[in-house]
Amino acid sequence: MRRFHLQRDHDASGVSGTGVVAEGVEFSDGVCALRWRTGTASTAIYASAEDLVTIHGHQGATRLVWRDPLGGCDEVAYAPPVLPEALARRIRIIDRLRRAYP
Image (tube, helix red, strand yellow):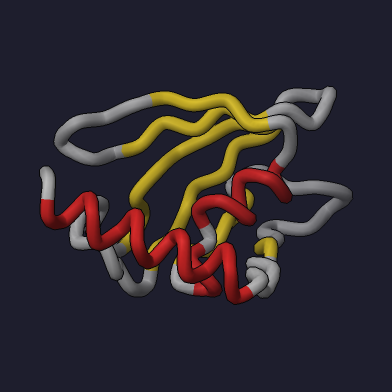
């Protein structure tokens, strides 16, 4: 089991802010639990760290940073995958709707 946090450099939605926006843990089977540090905190479960970054990476605006070492490394960061344009467009629409209907 190892801990991580989400480091957000740019908050396009205006909801979660920047800096360390969430904390999480990866269990030995690869499943991840994530807890948002926002005013209306929530907790979610993901099948893998890769899935979590695919959903919350916002095309590089947010990084998953490991707090616990793996094989002697002090810190390892997942590079967010490049989203297909159709998915990126849907995310932008959802972000606009969240701002319009808080």
